[in-house]
Length: 352
Image (tube, rainbow, N blue to C red; front, side):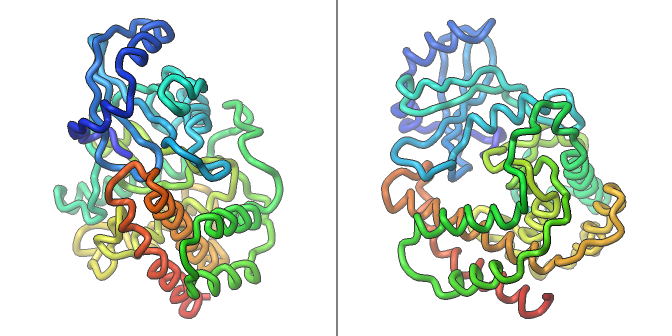
């Protein structure tokens, strides 16, 4: 999901009942005035997202997809809650305006938030920038991630935002279940990966913070001219969990090829020649910010990240198979499940 480049899409207007939606938003949001024009954002595979241009300004509407949903998936209400809680924190988020839990209005739960005018970068190599700028943008991503993991969850009202206990054990159970529920055919590499992860779970070290769940370059809106993040987007997978999950997930993405589905990686790229920190340097900078000497079990965290992404992608492919995907490209994503599992197994073999 991005707030950068919505494209006109007639099907978007068909999906949203314009008159009823305009009346509802006018009645429930102070200062909102129609008429409205609707454009669907081209990005995003999970929760359909729309640019709403109204007489009173520009907004973003994010909804659950129509149709039968997997349990706990597409939690737009959790997105709304976490962004509202982070409004005055060091983590930049859009201002959320209203959550509609009445599914009858547009066919699913949705929320409205402000539209953040800025830049979203889709290529992890940042070809639009020079070396000094690239270094600054990666430094900013690192800063924001550490700020997120430093949030006092009790102070912001999120102490009950996740379950107690071993985060990775819970996550492995959850995503294994989600994967099995959306499995279209047997993938041996995924079966072997799930088995290894179950036997290699690190002991719970007591670390528990707010985690984003999908922290990556293209889920951040940057200032139009500065290397400053102004909005972290797509909080659907956020919860209370282990901070190393976010860090490993971002590093996992950067290990991937330049065009791996909807993720742009840096596989085979000379990072130093571009002013982009190495994985080791990026992790060390994060540890410095968090007051951590080192990170043990790094191979497990990376392998788990590949597994979870594969499970998410399988869910998208299943929705496409069932006709409920929010993007036409969703059906192609199923082809990435096996390669992701194989990348995880390669990490296990070489680095564990």
